Length: 462
Ligand code: SAM
Image (cartoon, rainbow, N blue to C red; front, side, top):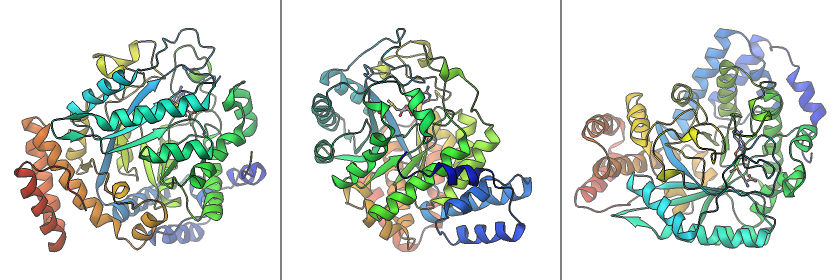
């Protein structure tokens, strides 16, 4: 596969645990918020000593808190189509999967799903779709869907940012996506191991691993500079995937002067009609998973880390402490799933099994209980603080203040407009605590916005 030197990665995953002095030097580099090399990251992944793993964890927490503060950004996925031309053997949307109930939402149905999400307090959407045989038809549908989602309002609540997870497009079609107003373009390479990739993806447009890898290059060339990447863990060795992702990032940094804005760490979950999705061949332990997430935090300190509802509530809460900065809440992974109450895993239109089906209110209550500030902020993208501009603000340590202010303002809006009394009570207590830790200047900005919220004004940000 392009840009991925498998020999190098195979050598790095065999590395034994490094010496204590080498370990300390890498940790020191991380404390200075410096990006690690793939080799240094491999050395951290190789650590087995419990005491050293605890140091990795503590450092990951320090790096996250120093760059982003205690805020955690919330989003919700919106699946619009599961009729797919591809043959991904681990996915229930696979073309050959006979058990999946198929649906492509109409524009009115997309608006209805959006309305349901807005009523529940969501403001940030990740739009996902399967792929058809005709890219031009797809892009036309995606652009209409994005327009539809942005057009809906419920009271004063509107969608502030639509990120997308979609198949690779041409530069020309990526430009249309950008013009439609997307935030992040996200695409998972699934596996960076070429032989495994080719084995799992049959025929169809997704069968070419280099075309998928090139999608990011084309998106950058089209002017989309907020990018999300990640492997699908469980298809091949997790250390190989992580180190290959770091190599992919290193290539992007060299070629475009910019890496991804976010990385995701999805793990393979059982999917209806897919035997491979039940395989434990490349499963790894929760302890290894946590160490891996912490190492990602240290390796790419300025990149957000996303954790989805594939993981359990307990695991998600633990990972907040290890550097995760964005989480989804009350996700439904089927087109039209938000109209359906009850166990989402029960109906055969879902893409895979979800392990966290808490409501947004329960997720928020947990975040508050652990001292994290829920945030619905979309300010960076709306103020054009994306790509290199974002990095130029984040690297000198200046993004945290903006994150803190916008998190508090969007959280108060949520508390006023959507929260039940108990959540509201605890939420305001957390707000008071955070206000007490802010500089006078930032606190005054927040208090001015708070006055406006009390007057009924919404959606102010810095
Ligand atoms: N057309 C989009 C594309 O080409 O990327 C489809 C994206 S799909 C809706 C989103 C992601 O779900 C996939 O990229 C894959 O990583 C993940 N996925 C598929 N099957 C899965 C499973 N069984 N467990 C967990 N995640 C899965």
